[in-house]
Image (cartoon, rainbow, N blue to C red; front, top):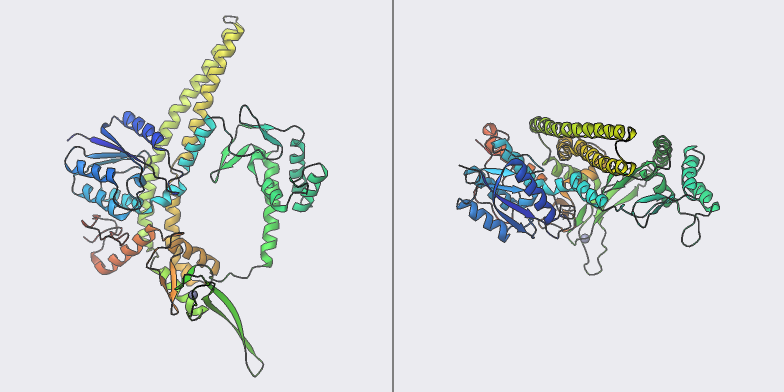
Length: 531
Ligand SMILES: [Zn+2]
């Protein structure tokens, strides 16, 4: 049977979708992808609803048409465009299992219709937000569009100004030496932020209120890569087209001084932070810690830490009792251990990832090689052009015009190549990190490292822990600000399945999504099945 695709583009007004390509951009990229890969697209569908909850009209209509045999493939930008809830994700996988849906194509993700491919896909569906957060590629695309429009993201820092016409950063001739000297001053390791601020103040650099710069502002300047020619955008450092004011070497020296000084300060207040601000009381206020010293009649004393409700609500009088830190800590650790990934699973997953990585590196290298050849041929063209100009075969004006055109083409190709090399496997790293974290739970949960524990618990549970009558557990309702992420739920469910199945359990083999997913429970499909 022929491959027939429905092209599906989706973007909602969700905060989560902020960094996703616009529908128009998705369509452009998808059409190009279809063309490049010779795919037959029978229809193009657009949806402007969130995929967090089931019940999207266009999506459901698409699945119905696939069930009717109109098409047997879907082309979308990324798995997260198709599903962000277990029901829709389960439906897709179910249709794949029934061989009603045969092909899924994503420019951002390689999918093959095997049990292993479906397994990866089900993780993608449940983890898609996690990926989107980390998809630097999306950010870069947005930025590339910005750069194409000639806009530099943000206000020019000291030493530069936003050129009103080109919208690029331009060197502010009088201020540039001051910025440079500020870096040199700090690199000597004899000045504090205040001293740098005073130096700038003496040279006329002041706040709007006519005061010296505050410490934070000085620090922000000293860590700003813009000064050596790069710039930070979307949490990433990009190469800029503007002129650098200092060398990377000077910048690095300043960073070394900064780091040394920060560490010296941290040592002073090295007391571990207790596990505050991650568990809620039944009255919805946060649980906090308190140190109490008990004095005995014989003169000795003993310090305890208790966890209790902050009782900050003005309307509810909370009577939940306090709990001793040992008990609190132990309960949290036990909860977390339910999410620890067995080491054997981790190595299996990592092996699959490595295979995928090798494949996509291969593709990236092929593209880069093509570009490299085109760039070489442009360079040769330039040389021939210069030759004919020197031999007075062409006019100067002609020469300049042609040269400018070739140069600009070359720069575009070079940028494209840079982004291919940069953009490789942006989704692999977060996935590996997640696996690492999931395995590290075994150790962290048993350790005394409260700082590591706190960040681990926030990562796994979000802000969904609750304490009731001295018992810590997961809250039934998901708090809006920071819900528990689905990939953790999926991992725990899979562990439960494995425990039930015992020796019959085979990780990742013969993935089956249950035909009917219970509404209201999330991630009920689990990562795999029993054979
Ligand atoms: Zn309370």
